[in-house]
Length: 625
Image (cartoon, rainbow, N blue to C red; front, top):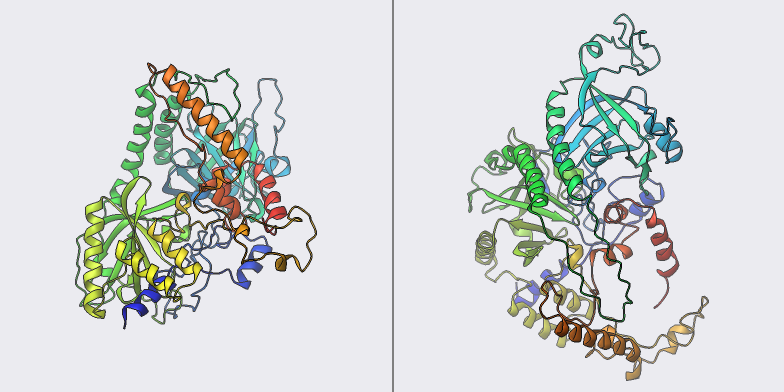
């Protein structure tokens, strides 16, 4: 294999997968499967070879399948829950229980119990009667997922709870389903059956977890992704546990509620400056309120609780019984790392062998919940066999690695993106830079010894220079060369804050660019031989228009003058020309709205403003400008 051929294979691995016709049919059906939480260029549900799967069939040939960040495993195919339904930064504690849920409206301050909003969907969440489902506790809320997909998922944030969750009598003051009736004193008659045909003996003995909320959210009713229903009515929820005691859940909920209560007290002090200013002038320097360490203490307390709950599983070593071959030789010790996907992170441990790179998630099967990794490698002919008694592990074969690239995890230089031949890349983050560099060295040495050529690294200067030579020689087209430059600059399809960008090169869109109707001859009006039809690439976009550039420059100079006149004040921002960046998660999701609606809802806290955003996309996505 020549160096040029290896370079071309590495560049081909940069291509994002294309959406297929079957994917588009799934989207039109309104189903909330993995196709909704996707984006171009992320890992597909077939992007990893799953070790420990009970399936023995060969892996499907789906090399060009779009990436999937929704539920994809067979076990979780019926589950609608995703960490994307939580608040940004909130963690799923991976604690869930089978329960029967009931709810009733509470009297508000005015003495009535009318529903404060949400329509029929919300009314159903306020008047539930023995609804079967699963109760899940997260770091900032409690989530109930009904078994019936027609009912929405209910999320009750701790900050909206009026009292701390507590234990009470099972289903007191609640009606049972058909066939189950409460006695006059609120106790169950053990001789009667509930609506599921079971005796109420266990329900009579068990206690119920009781939540009282002034507000709660209803999501994905009828399995449709859309703006969340914000129910602003006081409601009492009762959850009767079917196979376990609610004591452990209540104990954990009390700790999280106390942390949220302390945060709520700190945030009750508002700071709203009464100074108005326009965007073309320098923003005024306003003294900030004094910082308090109590807020940090509250955050640290929540992190300590999360570490206490997830610590034992996070520290679990890699299970070597997941190796596919008896003769495999580990090249590294147990490595703590994470798989990064847009707005999500899956923690686990990894191990590099002479055969491949293994990853074992903290919670077995949790990778499949959000599609970070799927059941098998797309296009691979290798079958999936169950190995060992442990949970599922995922492996990327060494002979399928085509290139690597160093990446940032936020502001920390500890990420590694691995590009493969038969599926898209995977983004990993390690504990520190030293561990990442050790993995790069071992992978490069292993592959170089087999192919007698160095493994391409997109962020190395030598690769960029080689790509430039190929582009100048006409062996790379503009699209491929721009993909190389984006990857070399640290941009990845897995990171919304560093999503690949392409330059705006045209300056002339014709006289009728703003008209609704375009003639078929419009494309022939642009003369590519005329230099005036192309923008000046020596200037940023904000400086192309002389009037806009003058406004930005005047604002910059006013900030310089204001900084000089307030030199004694601290916490001053440095003068700047442009207050926004050309690429940000919000901008990226605006254009990926139809393939990543849940991600956009997460950034907008599930508000209905997303409808307006989608309408804007529908009106402008076909406009040439």
